[in-house]
Image (cartoon, rainbow over all chains, first blue to last red):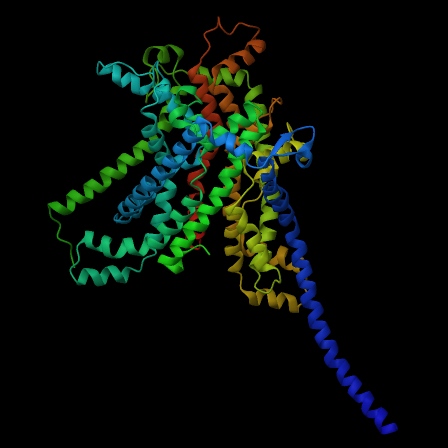
Length: 326
Length: 297
C-alpha cells in the first residue's frame, strides 16, 4: 500500500512538473497572442468601419434607395439601376473615356518612365542624377488643384501663355476650355508631367539593383550599349514592369478625379472627352442627389476592378508564375 | 580600359543631358511661372498676361493677402490641425497593426494580412463611403470627416510591415525572457528600431493630408471650414472670392485696384509652398520608402 502510494506520489510530482512547464509555455504563448491582438485592434476596427462596412454598401445599387426608409427597408429592384445607367448615352461616354485614358496612361507612362530611368542610369556623375531626379519629382508633391492653377495660366484665353505665343506668331488665339478636340492630348501630357518622377523612381530603383557583373561580362564579350540595354537591363526589370502593369489593370476602371475635374475646370463643353466614371459619379451624387445612378456606377467600378485584377493576375501566373501578385 | 572618347561618345552624352535638362525645365518652369505671376503688378498682367518672368514687379498681392488674412489663415489652421491629428493617429493605428502582422509567431498573422490586402483589391466605392460618412456616422460638415478616412492605408501598412520585419527576432525573444510583455516590447524596442520606416510613412501621410481636397469637397458643404487645397479650388472660380471679400471691404472691391490673378497665384504659393520646399529635404526618405514598397511588392 505504502509503496504504491509512494510511486503514485512521485509520479504525480513528475507529472506536475512536466505538466506545469507545458502549461506555462502555453499560457505565455496565449498571453503573447492576446496582447498582440489587443495591439492590432485599433487598426482592425478602422478597416472594419472605413473599408469593410462600405463594401456592404454595394446593395444600395440594387435597391430603389429612399433616404427616409434607409438602406434595408428600401425596395429591392435587382438590376434595374444598372439597366438605367447603361441605357443612357453617358455610360458609353464615361466608359470609353475612362478605359482609353487609362490605357494611354499605362503605356505612355511606362515607356517614358523606363526611358528616363535608363537615361538617369547612363549618367556617371551622381550630382546630375540627384538634381534631375529632384526636379522631375517636384510635380508629384503638389495637388491637382495647384496644377490646375498652372494649366489655367497656360490655357487662359486672355493672357494665357499659349495664346500669347500664338498671338506673337500672328495666329488666332484658341478658346481652349470650349474646344474638346485637343484635350485628350493635353490631359495625357499633364498626367505624364505629374507622374514621371514617380515612375522613373520605381524603374530606376530596379535598374540600379541589377548586378553590375552582368554588364562587365557583356562588355568583355563586346556588347554595345544598346545591346546591353536590350539583353540585360530590360529583361531584369521585367518583374517590376509586370507588377506595376497588373496593378494598373486592376485600376482600369478608376480615374484620377483631380486630373479630369480640375484641369478641365469641370467645363461642360469638354465632357465628351473628359468625363470619366469618377467625375460622373460625383456629379450625379452631389449635384443631382441621385443615389441610384451613382451607386450603380460606383458598384460597377469596384466589381469590375476586382474582376480585372483577378483576371490579370491569372494571366501573368500562366506566363511567369513568380511575378504574380498572389 | 579607357573608353574611346570620340565624337559619338560626346554626342550621346550631350543628347542625354539635353533631354534630361529639357525634362527638368518642363517640370520646374511652371512653378517659376506661378511665383512670378504672384509678383507681377495688375497692369503687368493686363498687358502681358501670364509670363515666365514678372514684368512689372509688385508685391501688392502679398500685402493684400496679409492685410485680409482671415480666410487663408482659417484654412491654414484647419489644414495644420487636420494634418497633425490625422498623422499622429494614423501612424499609431498603422504601426501597431503592421507590427502585429510582422511577427512570425503571431497566430492571426495570415488572416489579418489578407484582411488588409483585400482592401486594396476591392472597396465599396464613392457612394457607399459617402453614405457611411453622412448617414451612419453623421459627419457631414464635421471636421472629423477630414481626418478619419485617410488615417490608414493598406499600402502604407504593408510597407511598415517590411520595416518591422527587419527587427531581429532574437531581440524580441530575449526581451520576452526578461519578462517584458508585448506592449513593452512594442514601445521600447520596435518603435526605436523601425524609426526610418515610421518617418517615411509619416511623411507620406503628411503629404496626403496636406494635399487633400477630396474630403473637403465631399463633406464640408455648408461649413465655411475647408482645407487649403479646397480653398484654392473655391478661389479658382473667382466669383466666390470677390463675393466673400466684398462684404469684408464694404463693396469697394470693384473700385479698388485689386490684384486679381496675382492674388490667386500668391495664395497658391502660400498653400503649396510648404510641401514643395519641404520635399527636397526629405527626398531621401521618400525614395527609400517607395523603392522598398515597389521592389518588395
